[in-house]
Amino acid sequence: MISPDEALRLILAGTAPLGAEVIASEDACGRVAAEPLLAREDLPPFDHAAMDGYALRAEDAAGSAPRALTLVGPARAGGPPGAAIGPGLAARILTGAQLPPGADAVVMQELTALADGGRVLVLRAPVPGLHIRRRGEDLRAGEPLLAAGAVLRPVEIGLLAAQGITRVSVVRRARAAVLATGDEFARPSPGAGLRDANGPALAAACARWGALARRAPTVGDDRAAIAAAVRAALAEADMLLVTGGVSVGDFDFTRAALEDLGAEIVFAGVAIKPGKPLLFARADGKPIFGLPGNPVAALVCAEEFVRPALERLQGRADGARSLHVEGEADGGYPLHDARRHYLFCRASFEAGRWKLEILRPQGSARLAMASRANALAAAEGGPRTIRTGEKLWFRRFK
Image (cartoon, rainbow, N blue to C red; front, top):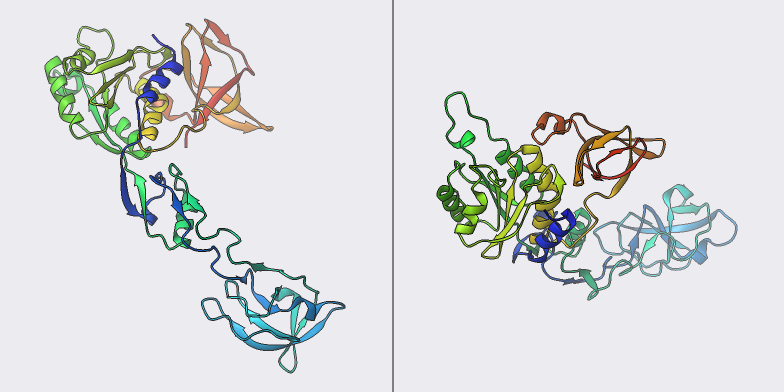
């Protein structure tokens, strides 16, 4: 077995982003920019009011308040800037409207009052520049807008829209194929079959992480049949997840089937619990994961190893480590060997710190147990016992 950190290093070492595609900007949330973009125009494109009020010359309302100014035609958002503001004049202006020529301040509506004779009373003296958004104060034309590799969040989608950019080049979504193996699923004896939970769960996980997930037809414990199924799935996928048949049982043929196809076995066996049989291989430059048959073990391996590979394929740079929040164990828990133990927990924030209730019993096939968890924590093994109050790194499930 190799360490989980070394396993992840080997997985990512040969995993590179896929090619690019051009899509509608409004459909690009969560995607990764494939190339850098420069601003097309200043943002904002002109001086405009930051709130509803009155545009004026600050010097005309200086000194003791109130000061009375004569109103001229209003400035509306989306319209022309309106009449020039000369000495002693003011214009009604709405948020987003162009600043009239000559004005250098906007007094908010709440600090004014209307007077007779088409005048407005300014109740507090303004300063030049008050409540004005200047042209280009956020971004100048020609400045960097997005870097290649930037994740397009809602704020970036808004930025593209503000620049009038309706289509953007992004790293394409990975095509992930999920192949479940096992006679218990493919050809069970009467009354002896099990339902495949791994295929649907893993396909759902890949889709949640942005991939185009597809389940391949389930195949039984047959070396040649598994090899044929792998070949067919890889022909239409960028990544393959094979679940089951990766341990050392009499009918575990996944590794042999991969070798029959000429795949490079990068490693087989990782010092983690659950998930020890995890296998990683490459064929035609495509990553292949051999995941345990027990569903909770398969999902732990997917969270910790498949997800980072999918993110890399889809252009995401290395970010925060998987387990990035620190909490305290809310009770003791025995660790019986030296592997890294992944523990399903209930995390709660109490008195300024995270408490982790380790669910019992843990188990590599206990889906109901895992469904009660809202966090996954890790602890290095011993053998030893986790102590109450011991610090553990974890990640919340959302």
